Length: 248
Image 1 (cartoon, rainbow, N blue to C red):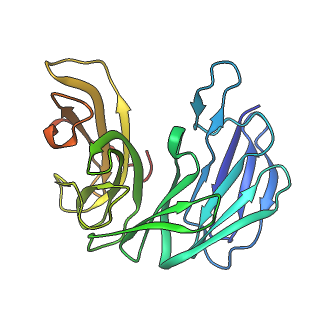
Image 2 (image 1 turned 180 degrees about the horizontal axis):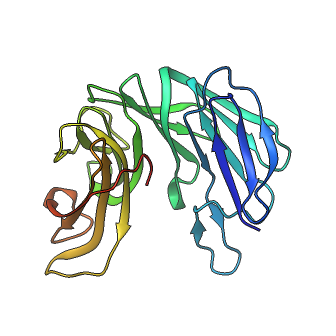
């Protein structure tokens, strides 16, 4: 069975059966519009790999939804709220569950211009990343790792209406690691890391796809000598498509 989750202006979060198009559960609790939702990553019992495309096959999985100043976590099986994260000072515009070693974290972006990392187990805020000068409607966990004094650290990514995409070390909230300026002047609406077939030398196979407000999708190619060394990373714009998307 394939499930889909959604958030709405009616202040509800819903779980749907894709095959029958029926609403299975309604999660109530938000007092304002629900701008973003995500389903927790799933563990495949056969090969122990993670699956975060929204296919749910068992108990214990959760949905997170973002609204005004808070993020709510819902237990899919019981439909009860299991936690609420408070810290943002405006609408939560983007939200993402971590996977693999970061599966107990949630990443969020907000109209308060901040990016925040949360610990699901403790319900506490881990980091606040500041640097954007406008809303943050897109956040992603990147496939990259950076080296610091402690050791290797995962890298997160955020896109903003200030027309920048920023990369951050999850262990440090002091400064962004790298900033990409959008090719248009209308801001970043959405972004997604995708893997494509390698076409040129030193291509690590990872591409960043992002959408803007002027009906374009951009695809950036990552060129690096060693995948784990973030400071050897270079960006090249390789494609543009004329389409309009709010989410990728």
